[in-house]
Structures are given as C-alpha cells and as structure tokens.
Length: 448
Image 1: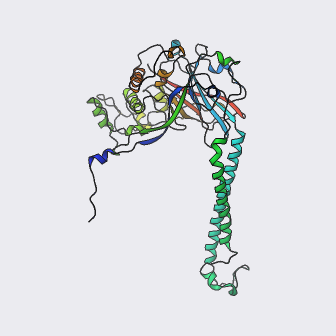
Image 2 (image 1 turned 45 degrees about the horizontal axis):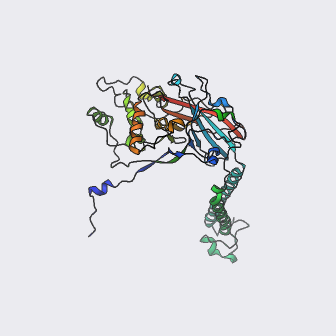
Image 3 (image 1 turned 90 degrees about the vertical axis):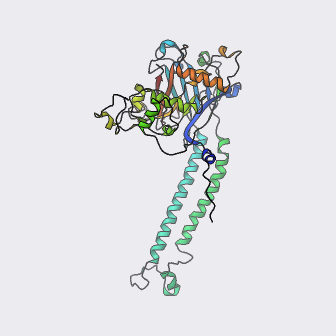
C-alpha cells in the first residue's frame, strides 16, 4: 500500500522566496581606503567621482540646469554589460536646493562613461572564436549524419549508383543497413567533435582566471589638483548589491480587481502579492501605485538603488510620469464607461504595462532607451554631509525602517524631495570613440 501524502499546514508554510531580476543596492559603511576612493570599479553612495577616461569630463556635467550650481554625487555604479569589451560606469548627480525641487529635466542628471578594455576585448574575441568553432563543428556533424542517413536509403540494385558507391566486394550488407567504412562520414563527424572538446577545456582554463585578470579601472590621477576636488560632496559609502527576493505565494491565483477593491474598502491589505510581477489595474485611484511601491520596498527597506538593465521600473505614484511609462490600454481609452461609485474602469479596460516607446531615442545613435536603474527614497535618508555624520551612531534596522517611512510620507525637511529617480540608457550602449562620456535620460517622480 502506497504511503499517504502529508498535507499538513506546517508544510504549506515552508515556501522558498522567489528571486527577481532586480539587483538591490544598499549602503555598506564608509569608504576609508584611499585606493578604493580612486577606483572607478568601486560602486559608492556620495563622495567624489572616480572617473574611467584618461581625461576627466567637463565639470559642467554636475551643474544643475535650474540654479546653475554644482550638485552632489548621489551614486556611482560600476555596471559593465555582459560580453562587452567596455568598462562601464554610471554617475548620478542631484541638486538638494529647495528652489530646484519639483522641477524636471536638470536637477537630477545621469552620465554614462565607457572605456575600451583591450585586454578583455581580446579575451572576448577568443571566446567568440571558440564558440563559432563549436557551432561549425556541430553543423558539420549534423550534415555528416544527414548524408549517412541518405546513403542508407540508396537502392543497392540501382544501375544509376554513383561512381563513388562501394562495390559488392566492399559489402552489400553494409550499404543496405546504413553502415559505412572507416573512411566514411562517421569519422568526419568525430574529428570536429574532438576539436570542440579541446576548445571547451581551453575555455574553462581561460574563464577560470578571467575575473582576476581584468584590468582594474583605477582613476588616472588623484582629485587633489582637479576642479572636481572643490565640488560639494556627501560622505562616501560603499554600495553593496544583492538579488531581490519576494515571498512565494501559497496559491497561484491572482485576485480580481473587484476582490482587491473590496479589501481596500474594508481597510484590509491584500495578502496575495502577485501584484509584484503583474501589470497595473487601469484605475483612476491614485493611491494604488504608491501602495504597491511601498509594499514592494518593505521587503528590503534599506534599499537605495534598484538595478534591472532592460527591466521594468517600480513607479512611485500615479502621476504624469506613470501615465507616460504605463499608458492607458487602447481598449480603455476608447470610450470605456467608468463607474462613479468606485472610480474604477469597468472590466475589459485591460492592464497598464510598462512601455518605453514614448521616451526620446538616444541622441548619439538613435537607438531606443531602456530602463537601467532607479534611486529609492531611502537614499535621501542615507546621504549625509561629513559634518552631519559626526557624533551620530549607526541606525538600527527598526530606526532605519521608521526613517524610511518618514521619507516616504515626506515630513518636509528641506532636503531632496523626490520619490524615485529613474534612469533610462541607450539600448545599444553606443560609443562615439574608444572612450565615451554621454548623458542619459532621467525621469523624476516628485513627492508632491
């Protein structure tokens, strides 16, 4: 008799978290090492920038377009793309002056720096050559197999056999049953396969040491004699990254819009968080977006950066930026009636999903822009000037959580006043030369 399956409640509670495509950036202590301060490969919060290019970019890159004053560096991200021969860093500056808050296009600016890495480029060429050799070998093996099968179908009694066909003395049985001689296609198939195996072992040897052999992207000079040394700066902190995990759902069922609305009307929060990976209901209520934002952030309240190249941003509120990035579905914009009681679009309106087609193309190459990362409200709490940091202890998790809630609700203390800053980069990561300094698009959702 087969053993009975255990369906106890305790087993149902043991659920593993689901890993998303998002990398979360969190503060990881002050940078005190002088070499790390000058190393462009060290991601950071605040501090002065460490540049990739042999020559520093123009100081005007950090100038606020509204007050014309230099801004502080918010974050610097070491973010080279996979299989790219370029070292790559993203820099984001922000203006904290009250008169510049709430103004678009210029109070938060992001720049992308590229530098051609000749040593890594050579490794990539070898890797691609090995990959091509493997693909060619595979195609040759497939062709040889097709020829072998084709030869097995030839009529041995046909008078139109080719001059190369084996004679009766070479074995009629071999031809009928598809066997070939030692010089046939089977051996031709084995040779490239063996070569591919050799290449594979060679690739493993190269890849094992590739990380250690990458050229460290150190700044070419110190900031002592640079104009950047006079720039205002926050305390420099390490920025560590790790994958985002969300609690796995007990049931795969996604609640309907009516169910979600009913729970909100009763003052309850939905227990199912399937919303994390779904589109937004086409609702006229403005708090649903913020609720979803704050619930997602609660799982890792100290996050300062969300990085997801080519992914989907997490909107802060239902505003003009949200409408631009998550447009109303066509079916809902063509005269769909709205109920007055709940102010919800009636069924059939569809879901709002991320669409970056409304964003301007890259001004350098014309390619479309894709979402790369966004700055989170907790970054405002973490950023501190050197003087404000003196005599203060590190916040506990509970204290930091309360600070995050305060920032989200915005007590209005004269600091930066945005909810999130989204950076959209060139999809092709274009470069004008072997070293590049290009400004990327920033969309800010202000906390109004």
